Length: 217
Image (cartoon, rainbow, N blue to C red; front, side, top):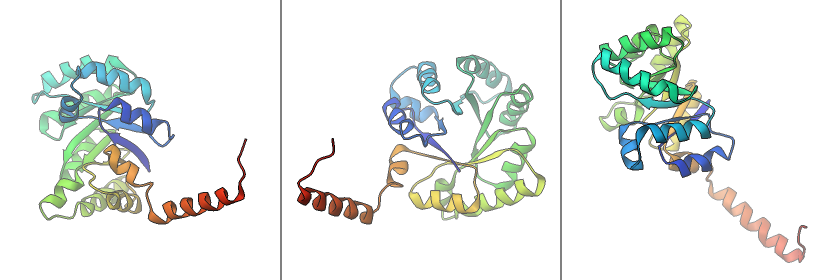
């Protein structure tokens, strides 16, 4: 499974990229707002740091303006992925861009039939929001299972990009179902490293090493 980080924080992206585990980045208008910087500057800097797909979201709601915004974003870098909402106009835009070989991430997916439409429109990625499903007492993982089944039934190339990830269990469940990608805030990815027995083991090894009175190098 690929790991994307959901942030526009350059320092956090640099830190995770150094682990070699980062396959891409997703951003949205809310994350750009938090960065306090110019949208295109942030996307350009992220694209230079991460060779994988970097999602840059259009903000228009009509097809023609979405295309115009996409044309401004595509030249930033070869790994820019245009992010569009799962609406009629969003899928029209997806169809046009995907036919030109542009990667498109269709976002705000909440049903498996929406995901089916996005795949037929040529989306490179579909972003179902599992955390927001959980917020309204629906199991977000049921959605991922349904999309996986449908995509496998018809051999769609669209990758399932699990979004709105709230905790490490979402990552575990997504991997078990067979999602292609998971995008997480930096703190969720870092939690995947943590286990009290790992910490305890390190403490014991260091204590025993200190007793040897030796040093390396």
